[in-house]
Amino acid sequence: MSVNKVILVGRLGRDPETRFTGGGQAVANFSVATDETYKDKNGERQKRTEWHKIVVWGKQAEIAQQYLKKGSLIFIEGRIQSREWQDKEGQKRTSFEIVATNFRMLGGRGDGAGAGGGASRGAAAGGGHDEFESGGGGGSDDFGGGGHPSGGGGGPEISDEDIPF
Image (cartoon, rainbow, N blue to C red):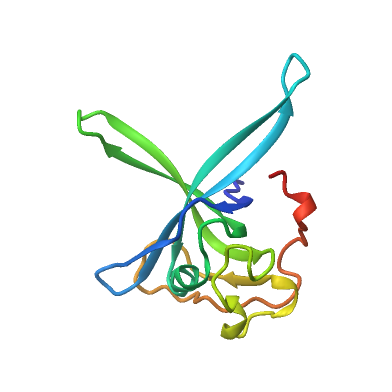
């Protein structure tokens, strides 16, 4: 048995960039920062920021492009995927990205999200939490998941006090 599951809560480092495949499917890319606070060997508090590349497909990508902005607080579920490529010197490189299958915008409407937020799309309007799930994954052109809002209770309730940054 194996499991490839990633859960992140962080802030967007840049606005999503959306493009379309030859088959017309939307794909959005953006980065998310997560922070970790720890004490070093001298007992002093240290903070480390980790940057994650996020990829969102289909209707979800269009929703991300419309509503997510730099600084938005977001809950993401997905899987980690590696990508191999060659750099300019011909060296083999590997990068990792998170392919999101579900995301939820956290925080208030003014917390980096676009005006109006996701509520105009029929998502849960209460508390500033809008969740979008994907039934598919990856880059196939027959993506059937869509960006439909999930029913209540889809993710943990996280307040600003739970976030370490």
